[in-house]
Image (cartoon, rainbow, N blue to C red; front, side, top):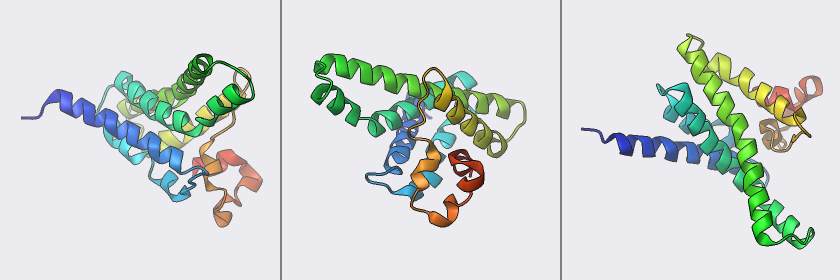
Length: 172
């Protein structure tokens, strides 16, 4: 008999794994090939779940990814901005949480599309790029850590960016 709590914990662990894979696909350490498989654990975790639970899984993955990618902001805010570490940590967590809403919303929409019969491979690339575009321009904009940037060393692949910008690379 399968323990439902253990199954849920495995789903959250898979979402964390996706966030970690996304983070290490970017510079330092820059293992860009991981970006091509980073979403697989998240997709497996979200398979068959409600859109609401998919939102939570996307939020966990996004929180892990952005917390790992933007850790250095604390150093800057404390060292150069002269903020107290508690203020810096609070602002950092707020930013990571805000940015995690975008992957969460994308996964929620993907799950809604799947319930409507639209396959993941059709909906996810479009929704992901739309999420990146909105994140890049909404409020004051935050275009850092777009998925396409992880492929900066793969010269044959990034040639498409001449025509499509970073969003075309993210779409691929």
